Image 1: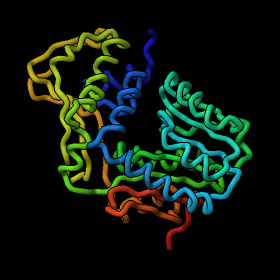
Image 2: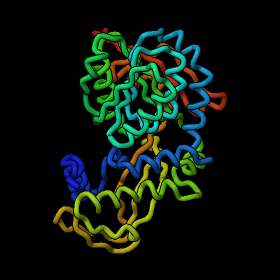
Image 3: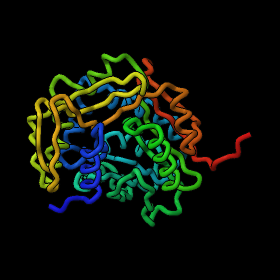
Length: 314
């Protein structure tokens, strides 16, 4: 198959740099997307379970705040498993799922259409990290961005702010955004969520190497790596790494690389935010929080925000 030029560039750049790192968005080929859906059903992985319950409980309040007739635009829609809670409550004019994994996107959109047969569903295969031109059919509609799963936590703060600004540009004037943000909590709970007993997260992480081998004519010995999840307290984030268990040499797209035992490839971050930090992040990205919902244990938050033009500092 023909490799995505951006994937090739990011992988080669990531293996050349020190420390090595590859952007997390490249996890999500079709197999990676399927594995992530399995992760969300694991007993250790609290974010999906808590956020889904929050969406169900808060749906009437969200609908009242948002109003009917908006186009719901979901960034990184995946399986759209949480989406019915929103679509059933806000009476949207259209639904636009955006995802980088085209095959998985089309499968999910078709499954959702069976539950909402009268709703216009307009899937867009794209990298939501960049401003996206909405489908012409929704150009004139007010929009509600939907960004669940605390995916915002996968980005370092400066990238997260840039993404929020890109979302505001994509959604346009008068837009609203409903975003899920994971809270800081005890380290044991966090580590377990990203290093489950069944090893599904490990398979998800290692699948990135399988994808590199398949799409970039590489010969990485996947059995030479293990999955690691670490808590970085200074950065308030879980980090996922692939650690070499022995000295390795391999080629990617004709270029030779070596790694010593113990060296890692940094593959994902998952930043956690307190209430004030979350609101500050949104404001820096051009969004003004107007409502917030959290569970009884304050593990996870849903925040509804409005797009606001930049103001002048006093």
